[in-house]
Structures are given as structure tokens and as C-alpha cells.
Amino acid sequence: MLAAAQTLRSGWVAQGPAVRAFERELAELLEITPERVVAVSSGTAALYLALYALSLPEGARVGVPVYACSALRNAVVAARGIPVYVDSTSDHPNMDPYSIDSESVEAAIVAGLFGRPVQLQRELPFPVIEDIAQALGARIAGSQRARKQL
Image (cartoon, rainbow, N blue to C red):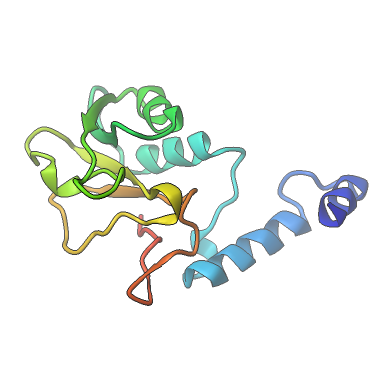
């Protein structure tokens, strides 16, 4: 609360020193360079920007988990894509990205639910955006898995 109050009093609510400090700290947590972190207004905005950065054509089919918040679907629709719903794994509500027919999508958004990142053991034939809102900083077998290159 103190940081929020100080930020409001400073007059720098957006893109000020507190935001830059947050971006640096998040980069450190995710073990990536600070220039790869950009704070935005919402998770939906972040997902939309990630889809936009992929330069997908209008009507692109994007795999999304059947069990996740609506932000994933909303970002796909905002990017003029078509959500393709993908089922969960047999042992957890996380989406199984390996069950996606690579001919049926141009990209996918995976979401690590309940603190458990999606386990991506091998490359997929399409770009994958990893939504780590519920698994920020989570590790699999001691490795920082919850991060994405875009």
C-alpha cells in the first residue's frame, strides 16, 4: 500500500519510475533482460500485444485452453483471430498443447493454472504465448519455466 500511495502522490501513475522499477524487478524474477519486460494495463492487453507482435493474419486460428479466464479468448478476438478450444491434460486443468493439430492453428496461448506452469518439453510447430499470471515465478524441476521469448 505504501508503494501505491507514493506512486499516486508522485504524479507518475503510468510509465514513471515505479513502473520502470517494477519492470526491472520482474525481469530479474523471470531471469530475462529488462528490455524484454513491458508493463501494460491488463493481462488482456498483454496477450493482445503478444498476438499483434506475431503478425498473424486476420482470421488466424489460435489455440486457447477450454478452462481459463475469458481474457485469453478476448485477446484472440480483439486481434481478429478465431479461438480454437483445446482440452486439458488428463492430470491437471492446464491445456495440453501437444494435443493440438498443428495444421489447425497458427499460434496458441497456454496458461499455467493454479501455480503450475504448462510443461513445454519440446518445440511446437507454431508460436506459443505463455500466460503466467497464475504461475509467476513457478519452477519445474528447479528450472524457471514460466517465461516466453517473443
